[in-house]
Length: 221
Image (cartoon, rainbow, N blue to C red; front, side, top):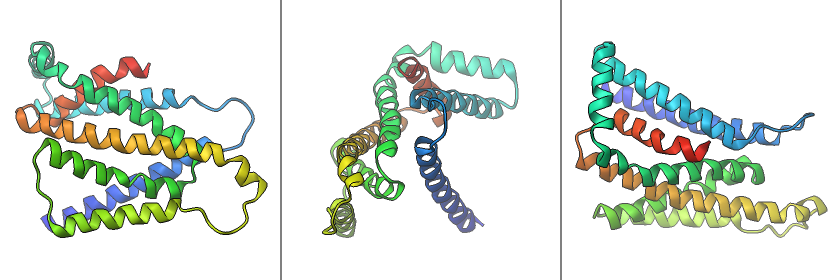
């Protein structure tokens, strides 16, 4: 049962990640009359939905008791300002990353973005080694080298003659590439930093996510 649940969760995660990229790319390149939505607005709405989902999960953990929910939020967030303050750094980085992803998808095709963004696996591994003192095996390092090689091949210019439209979009492709690379480094650092905080404290991941949104909502707005 646990093995089936594991593969089901993996399948849902793959579907969610892929569909998110395609949906974001479609929404940023769709040609229609009128102004396009602001990417920062989408980031704010995502943060609001995130905090709503986390509050509901904490409410469920509190046995669907509003008084217990209020007590948990007050004790774990308001009465522990230093613990809450620890999330200020990753929340700001996540906000920057979420906005950069929209910039990248507005200037890169979905396939190039998806492959290049996998460099976050490399940056996460490097930050895990430096910040969490994790040790990687030979096969893990080899996998990272293969990943870097694959990303390099995707970005390698083709020998075919470039059309005027492609030449005109070279600058925007460079902007998209820089945006996704910065997002990879910010994702790796923020993810490892968040993992380090979770391991050092006993607070639930839902409480920590609420603390994240408390700091990320202001710069997002």
